[in-house]
Amino acid sequence: MATAGWANERSRLALTQTLPAESPAQAAQRTQGASVFNQPWLIAPSLAQPEFDGLGPLYNALSCGACHLLNGRGDMPDSGPPLRSAIVRLSTRDKQGAVVDEPHYGVQLQTEGIPGVPAEAQLSVRWVEQSSAWLDGQTIRLRAPKLQVRALGYGPLAEGTMLSLRMAPSITAAGLLEAVPESALLAIAQEQLAQGQGVHGQANRVWDIATRSVALGRFGWKANQPSVRQQTQVALHEDMGITSSLLASPNCMPEQRACLDAPDGGHPEITDDLLDALVAYQQSLVPPSQQAPTRETSEGSALFERIGCASCHRPNLPVDAPVASKLGASEIHPYTDLLLHDMGDGLADGRPDGLASGRQWRTAPLWGLGLAPLIRPGALYLHDGRARSVTEAILWHGGEASNAVRRYRELDASQRRAVLAFLSSL
Ligand code: HEC
Ligand code: HEC
Picture (cartoon, helix red, strand yellow):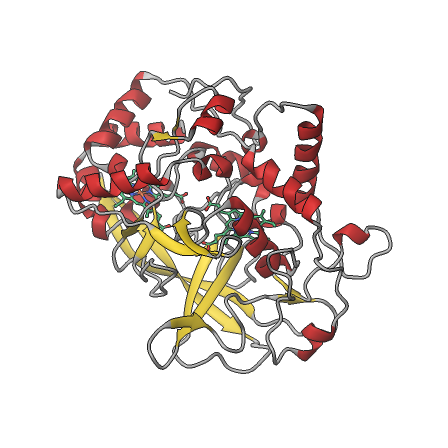
C-alpha cells in the first residue's frame, strides 16, 4: 500500500492533488500552472489577456483541461458527432520505407481553425460491433471504432497514410513516471524475457528535442514522448497551436497560407515562465490513494498477480532519490512497466511511433482507474475508448497478454468479481 504522507481523498478532484509545496513561491507557481492547464487560449491579438493569445491558427481544443478533464481521461462520442478529446496522428512512408510525417497535414489532424483558416478535417467515428465474448453465460459485446475523415481542407491525404486514433489518457501523477530510473525499466524487460511466458516488453526510444539525443519514451499511448516538458510543448503545439521556446514555429504546413499569414500571439506564444509553471504543476501531482483493502480486493490483487496481469501492470516501481525524499516513499504504485507490448491484431493501429510497431502499446498505468467513472461518468477505456467497461478492456487484450486473459476467463465468477473490485479500488 502507498503510505506516503500526502493529503489524499478519493473524490472527483483526486487527480488534481499535489505534493505539499516547499515554499510560498513554489505553491504560487503550482497554482499558476493549474490555471494555465485549464486556461482557454484566445485568438491573437487579445488585449484583455495577451499572455494567453495565439490559439491555433489550427488546433484541436482550447485548453489542456478540455481534453484531460480534472486531469483525467477524455471521452469518445457515439457514432456520428465530432471527436472532442481524442486526436488522430498520421504518418506515411518515404521511398526508402522510413516513416515520415504526412506531407500535407503533418503529424496530427487539427479539426479546428480560427476564422479564415480552414480546419484540416472533420473527424468522427462509427462504432462497429466486432465480436462478442462469453463470460458466465453472459454475452459481452465488443465494439471497435471506424474512423471517418471528412472535409479535408488541404487536398487528399498522401497515398498509404497511416492513421492512429487516440483518446486523451489521464495524466495521473505524470511527474512520478518521469522519476522511475531507466535501469529499473530495462531490468523489467530482461526479467520478462527470462521468464519465457510470452511477455517481452520493449523500451521505446524517441527524440528528445531539448537535449538533441535519443531518450527513453515514457508518455503517450505508445510511449512516444520522453518527458513531461516535451509532452507539454508538443501538446501546446499540436493540440492548441501554441508555440513555445522548443517548438517556436507555427504549426502550419508550407501550403497552408492562411495559417502562416494569421497573426500570432508572440514569440513564443507561451512564455517560459508560464511553461515552467505548467510543467511544475504536472510534476507535483500525486496519485490518488488506493481504497483501504477489503477481503475481496485483497483476493483480487493476489489473483491479478497470479494470472499474470502484474507482469506488465507492475504494482511497484522505484523512483529516484530526490523524488523519493519529497514523496517520503521510495516506490510508487502505477501498475505499469512503461514498456511497449504487442497487444495483438485486435488493438493494432498499424502505425509505428518511434520504435513502437503498429501492434505495440505502452502498458497503460492503472493507478486512479477506479476513479475514472467518478471523474467522467460513462468513462471509456483503452487507447481509442472502445471499451465501455473494464471487463471489455480486459477482453480486448491479445498478443503478449493472451495467456493472462485466458487465465482471467478461466477464473470463476466470484474470482473475476474480486479482480474487478481490486481494479476499482486503484
Ligand atoms: C485535443 C485533446 C488534448 C489536448 C487539448 C491536450 N491533450 Fe494531452 N493528450 C491527449 C492525447 C490524445 C494524449 C495521448 C497522446 C499519444 O498517445 O501520443 C495525451 C497525452 C498527454 C500526456 C501523457 C500522459 C501519459 O501518462 O501518457 C500528458 C502529460 C499530457 N497529455 C498533457 C497535456 C497538457 C499539459 C496539455 C495542454 C498544454 C494537453 N495535454 C492538451 C489529448 C490532449
Ligand atoms: C503484455 C502486457 C499486459 C498484460 C499481461 C496485461 N495488460 Fe492490461 N494493458 C496493457 C496495455 C499495453 C494496455 C493498453 C492497450 C491499449 O490501449 O490499446 C493495457 C490496458 C489495460 C486496461 C485499460 C486501461 C485504461 O486506462 O484504459 C485495463 C483495465 C487493463 N489493461 C487490465 C489488465 C488486466 C486485468 C490484466 C490481466 C488479466 C492485464 N491488463 C494484462 C498491457 C498488458
